[in-house]
Image 1: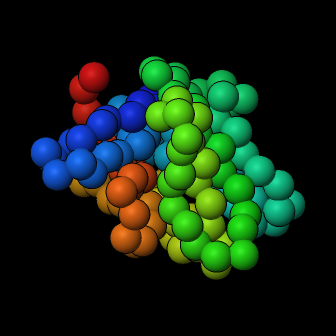
Image 2: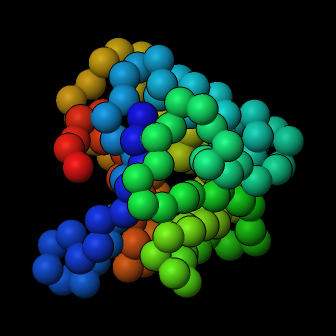
Length: 126
């Protein structure tokens, strides 16, 4: 699994943080990490500490907050995905289809109107 940031992805000043190039086994690992670390233990999850993720120009840290804010950054290098417990439960549910079979589909991991989206796509190139 790889992680990167794509600035101005569509020419409309919209951006994506992208988790891509993974198989079903890595989707299961990520789903389980999110479930155990954030939903159950209520701790933050720093992807720089996750062995199976190759980071390319950025880092992503998941953390709980009192409202769903999506992905935020100050420097376009360190990104914070800030959601409620319910928001992370919904994210885990969105990962589920990728954990049941190999897929060529993709999904956005939350539905919040922000300038930065979080894309989950099994295929992709840098």
